[in-house]
Structures are given as structure tokens and as C-alpha cells.
Amino acid sequence: MPHPPVSPLVPPVLAWFDAHRRDLPWRAADRTPWSVLVSEVMLQQTPVSRALPVWRAWQQRWPGPADLAAAGHDEVLRAWGRLGYPRRALRLHACAVAVVERHAGALPDDEAALLALPGVGEYTAAAVLAFAFGRRSVVLDTNVRRVLARALDAAALPAPHLTAAERARAGALVPADGPTAARWNAAVMELGALVCTARSPDCDGCPLATRCAWLADGRPPDALAGSRRRQAWHGTDRQARGALMAVLRESPSGTATPEVLATTWADAAQRERAAAGLVSDGLAERHDGGLRLPRGPRAAAPDGPPAVSDAP
Image 1: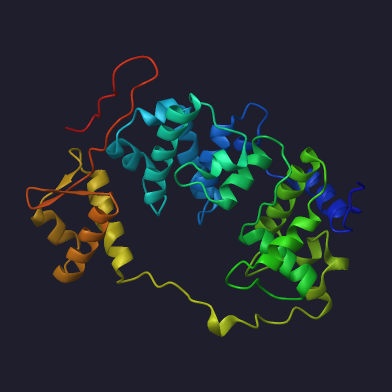
Image 2: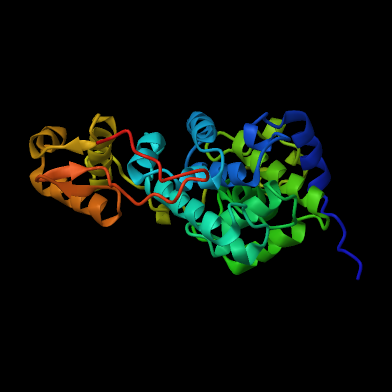
């Protein structure tokens, strides 16, 4: 059965990518499938500049699933630092444990097996298949969706929620062979991150400028601007949670007394909501009236007994 013709969007984007791609370590020849998965989890809702130093530190400390599986939850949360959304750290740990227990420590290259791992959803599985294994998949993050919405729909930004029709159209653009498909996925993502940005797109430097419906229409404003939810931060429970987590991470013992918590966040009712949320999410434990980092179970280390935390 013949493959569909290559979309006219593909060649210019691939040529641009070859000339402008960033030299990122999870794209290096010596990358491992696990290091790619770690990068994809860290990069969710997080810019490269923030994720890169944490990724490097993790790769040095826990280069493979067995290494991370042998760590404790307190160690993992400390190492995650201020990367944000710390539940991702615990999901990575759970994923590492599952890879060790189900796949002898080797990340599977099968989509169904990847999706069965804790914390691995449709996007992460597709990204790992493409960027770790060179397989054809449809990788749709915010950057890719924005490029396609502008080029094909003349829309300033994509719809708030991914639709089946949008997914099918994106899939039709992906080249047929695995290596080229993986390059396309990386290239269009890079284009959205560096050129076709949300707030200040560089249309003059875009390889799709002559093919972009949004640019041809005069760059109309976002038609859905009034319906998009903008998350507040200052004074919210999210900010309170972050403040309490920072105190726990920075404490040598991984603990915070009630007095320390009170000085960290003055609003008692909000402080308690934040603390209860951290406990419910497995990010903290109640301890002597205060909080402490969780002493989660450690899997067996690859060459011996469980690792010992440096926190008492």
C-alpha cells in the first residue's frame, strides 16, 4: 500500500531544524531511552533552561531505572528541587520501580507497555517512541499544536483541549518512515519553542512563513482569549504548597515543626489546606505536629541492599 505524499510543511521545517536545532543532551548519540523519558517528564510545563540542570544532576546520580528505584521518596523530592509540580518526581520513581520489576530494568519500546507504566501518558509514550527509539509516532505538545494551528487554521493559539480531529490531522503530517518521523516531531516542536512562540513569534525567521494561514490573514488575535483559564499564583494554595515544600527540602532533617510552618505561611487555614494536600499527594507526612518529607519505600538496589537516605 503506497504511503501518502509528504506534506509541503515537512521539508522546510526539517531543513530549518538541521540548521538551528539546539544541542541538548537528551538528543545526543549516547542518550539512553531512560534519559529521554526523564527529560520528557521534566519538560512537562517546564522550560528547557530550568529542566536542564536538574536533568544533568539526575543522570549523574541515577543514570538508570534501577538506580532511581533504589532511592527514597525524600531523596527524590530533594533532588527535584524547585522544578515545580513535584508529583512528577514521585511518578518518575514509581515508573522506575515498575521498569525494574516488569522489564528487568530496560525501558520497553512497545507503546502498550509504555502506557502501562505509572505516570506515562499518551504524550510521553509517543515522545519516547520517537526520540528514544526512532519510531513513527504522533508527538503533540503545546508547541506543536500552536505551529499547526497557525499554519493550517489561521488561529493564534490552538483550542484549550486536544480533539480527535486535531490528533488525526497531526498524524497525517508525520512522515511514514521512523527516523524521518522522529526528526519531524523534534523539528516542529523546536520551531514552536524557538520561533513560533506564544507571545512573540518571529515570523520573519519562520520556514513556514510563505505557507502560514495565520500570517497570511494578518496574525489575527486569539479568538478564544476570553475563555482560556489563566492560573493565578500569588496568594493561592499552590503558592502555599510550594512554600511548605521548599522548607522541607531545605531542612537538613527533612522536617518542619509547627512553629516553622507558621512562620513560613501565616494564614493558618490556608496553611493547613496546603499541608493536607501535600500529605494526600504523598509529598509529605505528618510528624510531631508538623511535616516531614515522606520516607517512601526503596526498591532493591541493583548490586545490594536498599539504599540509605542521607536524612535521618
